[in-house]
Image (cartoon, one colour):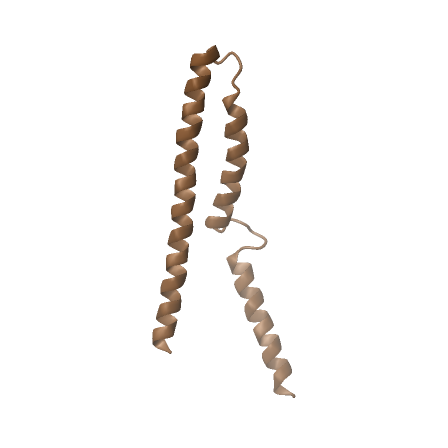
Length: 100
């Protein structure tokens, strides 16, 4: 029992580390690519029209949603809410099975 519990904790921690690695990889790519696009934009027209901001805005929206998921920033349906609901349903199941 203790071994399986420890193994479950390890697997959850490993999954969390993988999520963080993917997010930081995405963030690093964002910074490098947008910086490169800004450099190209500056040397092509001297920021007369800052077209690289369209890419920064679009990718930035995706990055924000990725951060919300990875860092559990969703106040409505985050991991805590999920955990509470699972426990609630398990208690309901336990109560209904008592009388059968």
